[in-house]
Length: 295
Image: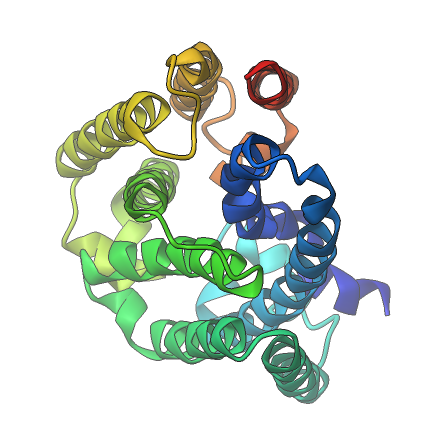
């Protein structure tokens, strides 16, 4: 059971926290109209959706590892994963993936049909990604970005709030930045052998990926900065801009680690385990809460 749980990649579950984006964006509106108690039903629904996304994403990880098990056995880090290493039989992983996919999509449908369709669509798209799309340069990055946006959209649907254009803009550029950083880090780690492990990397180069990383990082930071000033769901006095330094610091710290002392670590592991990034995220949450409460 322990290798099977490891194969579910629970360390990746925090990224499903994006389903809370719409809930966070709607907090100021609940306070503005004097109905802070309306948070609790929304928080419960979003929390359940988070758990369902965790199960659904784990199903896609299992399928991906089944498909890539032969290539992963030649990878310096991925060869240690439970499926390529043989700790988890392929049949066990396949059955688990199917069960998790059905439970997550079905549960989300019961919670909200729209959110359920988004989660089911994500599972289908990621299956296509693991089968063929991951081998197509540029498309592979956009597919990974779609998964991030899907989480944010489903979070808005489950609590029945209007989906702000800013939700699309910020989540899209943030997703493209993170997806590009994964490809950039993988290319740097594998060097000349990169294409042997992931065919799409044959179409990239370190210089091109560096340019793409710069563009997406800039777009993500600028779009968030504009959101704090222009969006309808934030205080009109622009006080939410006080959170910008925390976002900028976390972004720059992430790039510093990927290009330096933690260049051999998976990007998502860097993002979720670095103490300074975690501290910046905590500062962001605390500052946003105080700004919304004060306004």
